[in-house]
Length: 373
Image 1 (cartoon, rainbow, N blue to C red):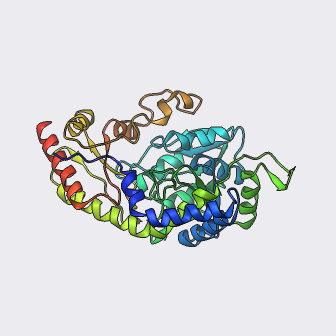
Image 2 (image 1 turned 120 degrees about the vertical axis):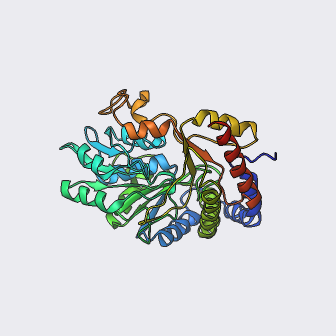
């Protein structure tokens, strides 16, 4: 059986090589590598594509979350309610502000945070809500925004996996007024290095984030407040401008591949499939299935040449970095998240996959799952 890798960066570069070469050459010829015209153009184009008033490019998705939290006033002693099933960097960005992550359990149908659980997690120390649009499936924002309004706190969207995904017809990321994107290479809009951006609808906040990403400078060598060195470089901005032009088509290809998976795997015993909600149009950053014998299924697929990964095997509240969280180190605190973490498995899905490859993976899953019954 021909192998199928989990991701194929060579194929991605090959598909855009001419445009990427032109973008890189443009930056090299300009002699301008930090905070220049490519970054400014990318910010304008990204804001237009997402429906945000503004976009501010930074060095990583983690720092995008951190700076967004700073911009809404999160600081030492505050609490931020978020998901226990996410990349650790969601929680690490909260810790970087001196704040404490407070986790809320998940909706078992979507694996995004449950609004009811979020409402129970809010305390007088809560400063912000930080829902994650996990795997590119939008969280249910309206009830979460209502909770935020009722408690006088801000909702910051972690849209790091959700480039171009839509909630009730609108692109996520700044529907709450502020949100964060990551451009890590595996993302739907990925750099050939690292990067991130904050989408923001408030001009004053956008101006402050621009200061904060550049050491808090108001002008050269004058630092009005503490900031970060978190600047999206010109090379990555130029590369991202190429990717942004192709993002919608790439997302549609992901959706087509996901539809094939859903059709081919619909009747596999013991296999749970992702389900889109009526309010959402996912970008299928990841195609995540569930199985009660996940590790055995993963091993069987490896034997068949199919690359898989687990996003994410250990919930954040059970990791040492978050021992100081409200439920740190307490197994059983979030049963939906903990059960999911033991069952989830990400199958290959990227725009450069061929129809034959997705059918190969589906056949391997069917065969492996049948042998695990």
